[in-house]
Length: 369
Ligand code: CTP
Image (cartoon, rainbow, N blue to C red; front, top):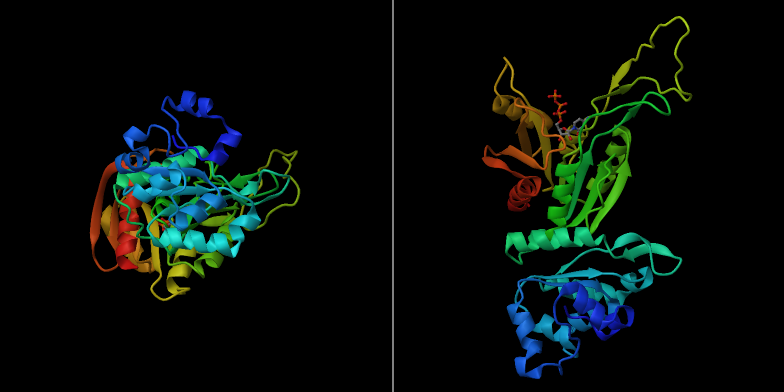
């Protein structure tokens, strides 16, 4: 635990020490016989600076070593993660932009701050992401065991969740998609250094750290936001389950029960196929587009036969195929899949966490970028 002098203005050294169960030092003149300004960085598996102030980013970018934390940053050869938190003006200032760019160029993972309430009455970009989500990013960086931020400088778009198609102001047609796989994809991409836009349809999970979350409800809204974000994206992963149909008419008022006991008849209209649209009208040359398919196989073909046909029909580059004949994957923390590629390759991903599958998908995307 290495607080800066400024951190000790907020939380005193005894509190840091008691909560962490570890010794706390801030300057390089304490315990000099153990050479802490070199040893801490050399022994670390991961250095996390959270919250990272504008001042700390500036000192780190310029290689200063005027306290124990900046000395540790200079001696560390392990992955380094910064979670900046500051007022929007400070984050947007050209000096901070340049410092963040310098750190990122050096292979440091600088997590994008969240938007929301700041220390004063103002709101905006600069809020510290949820600490549990910062922890998840750190875990991903440690699990990968490498500092390679192979998606740094890339903008990726992920869709997640299930859309709702309204019948009236209170009723809708929906599906059971939990959003877990899409959120795992967004989190994994952020941990690999990407700028991530997550278009989330009716998902109640916490925002992944460093990810821009755009909330939608219907397939029409999902289409609008995905197409807008795809205009500047290097890769788009359609992990969402958009409803294939919507009611032909949406009633402004709640539909009442008829006194004669009859039930209303609901007419359905087909929704646009977003994956097909963005695959056929590529917003950028070289953009990699990934679809998902839940298949059971039937008398017209096996799961993989149907998936190959879907890959060709949709025109995407990769299709992540779930065999759901033995039961659905909805809401489960685990997944197993085959990642089919338009170039004929197929990668089997055995049952494991949705985070593990997410990294295999990004490996495949990164190879094609
Ligand atoms: N998808 C989409 N827009 C839709 C429906 C689906 O972009 N209106 C995307 C999903 O996000 C997923 C992929 O298409 O990545 C596969 O969806 P699926 O519903 O399995 O494909 P369908 O074309 O509907 O095929 P099927 O006839 O098997 O239902």
